[in-house]
Image (tube, rainbow, N blue to C red; front, top):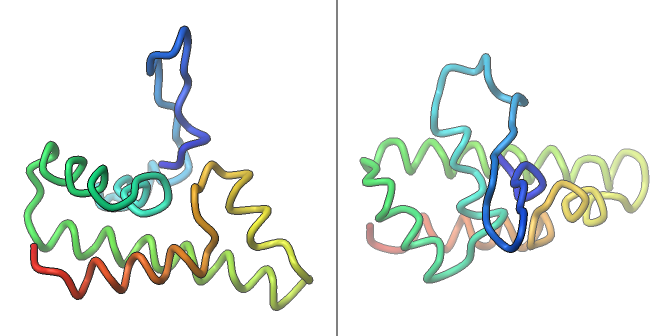
Length: 110
C-alpha cells in the first residue's frame, strides 16, 4: 500500500484501494507504507496499533527494501526518475531516504 492508495474526502480517510500485491499471500507487503508514508513517531504508532509480531515487521522491512531498490534501479537503468516515481506513488521520502529509514528501524529495539 502507498499513500497514493488512500482516498480522502473532506479531510478524512474514506477508502483504501490497492490491488498491486493482492496475490502475494504475505500481509507484510501491505505494511510497506510504514516507511514510505510514516516517519519516526507516526511509524511507531502505526506498528503499535497493528499489534504485529517481530517476524511480520521484519518481512515488511524486507518488502520496503525491495521496493526501494527496484525504484532506485530505474535511476540507474533509464536516467533520473526514481525520486519522481517514488513521490508519484505517494512516498514521502526518496528511495535512498527509504533505505536509510529501513536500516535505522532494523537497528532500533522493537
